[in-house]
Every structure is written in C-alpha cells, then in structure tokens.
Length: 98
Length: 346
Image 1 (cartoon, each protein chain N blue to C red):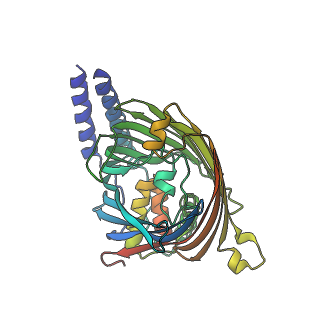
Image 2: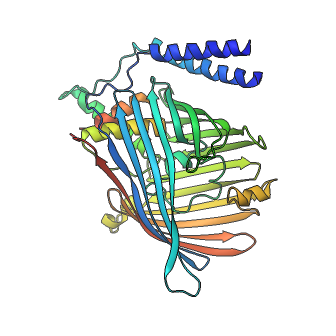
Image 3: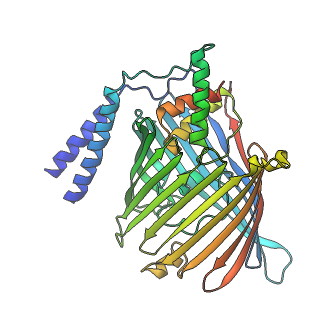
C-alpha cells in the first residue's frame, strides 16, 4: 500500500514540477498569429506549412483547410491526441487559417 | 506518513495547476464544436468467407474556453456474413464507446485528461486506428497488446527539448470497470517518445502494469520515419506481454513523384507490411480474451490506396496468414472522413 502512495505522490510531484516549470517560462515570447501583411506573416506561414507537414504528415495525408473556427477545434484535438507542441500548434493553426 | 506525503503532493499539484497562468491557446479564432469522424464500407474475403462491414465512427469535439476540450468517439460497426446454405447475409451491429474524456490543457507541458480514454500504448491505437488514416484496413496482429480503452486519469504533453528534438509523454492510471460498454482493466502505464524534427524520425517506448489478477507487465517500442525528400512513410511497432509478442513494419509510398500519369499517380499509394507474432506463456488467455494467435504467425500484407478526394479514399489489400494453416484475406472498400460544424464556422 505504501508503494502505491509513493508512486502516486511521485507522479503528482512530477506533474507539479512541470506546471511550475511552465509558469517560470511564461515570459518566453509567444508567436502572435494576429500579425498580418508583413514579412513576419510570410515567414510564419512558411514555418506553419513546414510544421504542418512535419507533424500532421506523421499520421495522415494532408487535409484541405477547414474554416477558421473549425480548424481551431481540430488543432486543439490534435494537440491532445498527437501531443504536438504548443508552438507547433500555433504555427499550424496560423498556416491553416490563412 | 505515506498518506501525509500523498496529501501534500495532491494539494501541491492542485494549487500549482490552478495557479498556472500560461495561456493554452490565445488565438483569436474561437473554436466551435464539431462532429467529425469517418464512415466506411468494406468487403473482406477471409479464407473464402465473405464479410460485409459497414461502419461509422463519429467523433464529437466540444471546446470550452481556451483550455478545455470534451471529446468522444463511438464505434458502430456491422458484420454480415452469408449464412451456410442460405443466400442472404446475416450478422449483427456492434456498438462501442471508444472514449469520452475531458481534457484540460494546463500549460505547454501538461494536459490532464479524465474519463474514458484510448490507452496510450504504442502509436497505432491513438494515432493510426481511424479507418480514414490507417493504410491497411486489417489492424496489426499485435494490436491487442496494451491497447483498448481505459477509465481513469491521464497526464500527457509534448514540448521541445532543443531546436530539433521534441519529447512527448503520457502516463495514466485506469480503474477496473465491468460496466457494459465501459469495460476497462485496472492498469497503470506510460509512454515516452522523441521526435527528431529535421530527419522526421520518431522513436519511443511504452510500458503497462496490470494491477489485478496476474499483475503482469507489457512493453512496447515504436518507430516512425518520413524521409523528407521522398513521399515514403515508414512505421514499426514491437510489443510484448505475458500472452505473446510480435512486431509489424510497414512502408507506404505515395507515387506522386512518378511523372507518367501523374494526375492519377499522385493520388495513389502503395503499402507493404510484414508482421510476425510469437505465443507467450498464457496461450488460453491469448485466444479467449485477446484474440491473439496462440501459435507463431507470419503475415505479409500488401495494399493499394487511391485518394479520390480530400477525405475520401478507395482501398484494396491482400494478406497471407502463414501459421499452422495458411489462408488469404482480400479487402476492398471505401473510407470517408467528415467534419460538420455545430455552430458558425467562420
């Protein structure tokens, strides 16, 4: 019984450390998909396409683009299902909603 | 003392989770609930017996706020066979709830899932199983090892370790359930994978411990590679448990670089897979409980897929079972992926 408590406590401790680590790195600049009509937009689009092919192509053929709000749901679903990273998710969403 | 440590860890975890203010998804596009999934119709000729298999697997996705997602998938599958000495096909419809889960995206490192979820063991169950995704309709022979659905809690995430390496992990606990359509075993386990983004190589390993009855362990390893210059998809899995072990290795090549009849070729995919299983210590469990071969089997599979439209795929395959007895399995069918918004999609 003690072993079970120890394992559960260890899992929770690791999860807590991960949350804390995320909090401490929150100041990391995030990619803002709102930026439009600039060189940065083109760069993000290209990077988004690259991440899309790298991540989504691991499992399935590339789908056509869906309307933006549908795409936001699908990308969130894929983030959970395929454990893609947050940056990849943002860039793929940016590319798929252009 | 152990209980005190557990209470402390639990409190610390909840406080950290609530305190965490990192933004999960700040995009300006508010997600809308959707129904997606796949429908298909397949005809199998298995050792001379013809089976008709219509199926639909609807997936409901309900996003809530920036961090929450409720998701569920049902499986409704018919199996019809021609009755002996009769002309008509007879059969049944099987209905299952594959998952019904609530996801909380706590931060860039952690997503917490509670409810009924697909057991994260290897890559096939979670990522390659949907009929519109899988390259061959017959699931691998080792699929019963470690997979299925679990009821409990799951911690998972994926984040970059460096510029060219992403790590992904999943760890879970599932409780025993004998409730009809919600069956699960009491197990704990985890999976970890590394994705090397430049060469597009993924390697990973899985582990599962049964916390009931035989208290056995299962292990798995997976590999995937999409070499960037060519439209080739290579995947492999190995799994081992008390009732058996085995592997499969599969290559799928899209003929898009063939210049002859390119309009047709770029939609065509050739698939080849080799798989092998070995019986374990517990042969009765293998056959009765898991439908796993109780003797050594080798099975080469070959398939041809044609992508008619986005989401619509025609496919045909041939498999040869090489065990104590040998037979052929032919499959032909159509798979369609759909997505319907349950609100304004723009």
